[in-house]
Image (cartoon, rainbow, N blue to C red; front, side, top):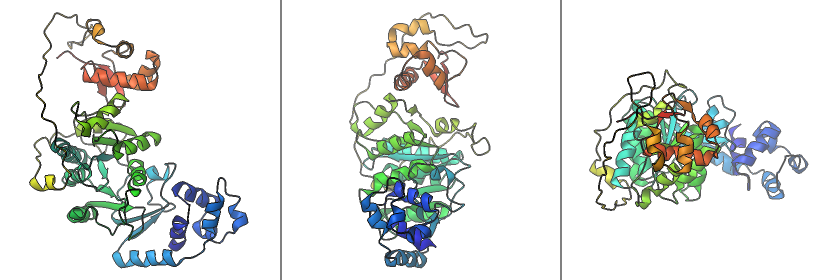
Length: 412
């Protein structure tokens, strides 16, 4: 019965990871409810505080939550339900109960991208969120985001115009509209996707809930796209959780010296995948979801509306005069690749590269090579090699191909 699932989640000291351990040990929340202290002591790693929490057999709060859900049209999804996304089920600490409205999309058979970023965003960041949201959705990907002000809101707004269902993950009860100006967005997500939370109705938007919520966003996704984030942003927590869960991490490059985007550049230095369009992200999953992904162009003509700016805590970008340096033309040897294409001459670029960059670049050729092979052949650590690859992409020497493969760039 559902009240026992809720009871297990409410037990004092029992977080998602331990709730899952208890569930696996007893087989069901009902059996866990009727167990005694001696049986609880057999559960691996269960502390005395947690055993005491499980000994509280009061069900009135759980029954009230069920009544609230029935009254407000809120559905419950448990860890053992067939509709529970397998992708989320396989993370180390999945929520054993989810509260939701809307329709559960087919997450496991679809590319899903979690879009995250700052609440206090620049107009540039907001525009990229709206553009990428549209391009990903229009290309067949499910966009997952957190419904907060700024990047989250604009990501979902863009995705809702793309035609693929969206997912909004809350850090409060499903009945709490936060921020309050997003009431219309809540209804749109319910109508065209899935609005979901692990917190029961009535739970306020506490700051402590949001970092915990992030694991659900990345757990539902194939990859996480950081649109615009500062060096201490919660988006970096989501990116970190994504890596722990084996997900891809993408980042849009940000202007150097702009604090609100420094988190993006930090991720790129650490090996995140650099992207400049939704198509760049989708390319990574064509081989996994060939029937779902459609590589379409478009979305570059999207603009920010006055209401878009009103729904973010704007961070004004510094006004910096930029001098664009154009490389001087010079005679360079072409790579003999047996075709009419001309590729970058690595020897001519060697003096411009660091030792790490050269160790990776020297392994590149016109034929795509998998990133794992590049790391092995370069004899660098994974972090060093991925950082070098990102810099080689920025310098126009390496080009990323689908399936985490790289090849030498063509001459411009």
